[in-house]
Image (cartoon, rainbow, N blue to C red; front, top):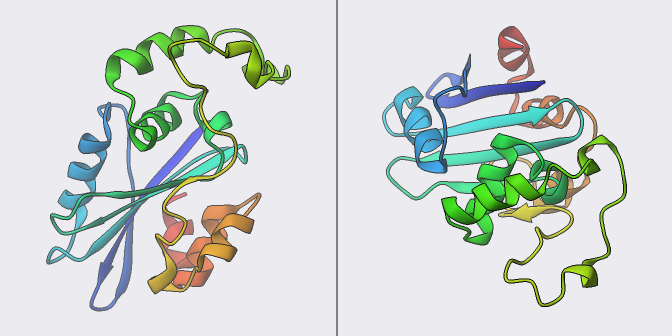
Amino acid sequence: MYFAALLARTEDGWQASDTELDDVETLTDLADLAREAAVDDDTVLALIEQEDAWFGVVRVDGEDDPRVFVSDAVVAGRSSYGAMLVDELIGRDDTDADELDDLDLDGTEDGEPEPAEDEGAGAPEEPRPAGPLGDAKILSDLGVDEKQLLALKGDALGEIADALGCTDVLEAVR
C-alpha cells in the first residue's frame, strides 16, 4: 500500500495535501502535479512510501528539474511508482522499464533472494543498483542532511516531517 503526499512550502510554513498517483506515469507527471500545488513557485516535496519497505522524495523548485532520492533502489524497483523513480535516476527509457517490469515478476517481491549480480553478466540491461539512489542532499537546506537521510528507516516520512517542523500537517493527510 502506498502513501503519497505533497508538502508545499509557504510563507507561513508547510502546507500538505495527500495525492493520488493513479494518473502519474512519469517523473514529469509527478513534477507537474507538484508544481500545481506550489505557492509562488516555492519548493514542493512529493513524498512517497510503500509501507516501511522504501520511500522516495521528489523535490520541485519552481521550473527547475526535479531532484529525486529513493531509499532502496532494488526494493522500490519492484513497485510501479518506485520503478518510475529508479528508472528515471539511472536513465532507462520507458521501453527498458516495461521489459524489466516483466522480468521482476520472478517471485523476489515475495522475499526470495535476488540472483547474484554476476548471473546477469553479458546481459544487455544492467540491474538496478542496490541501496539508496539519487540526490541524498535533497533536503540538506531544509534540515535533513545527507547522513540523516541515508539513516532513515521505518517511519521515514514522519521523521522528515519532524525535521521540517510539519509533523501535524503531514499527519493530517495520512
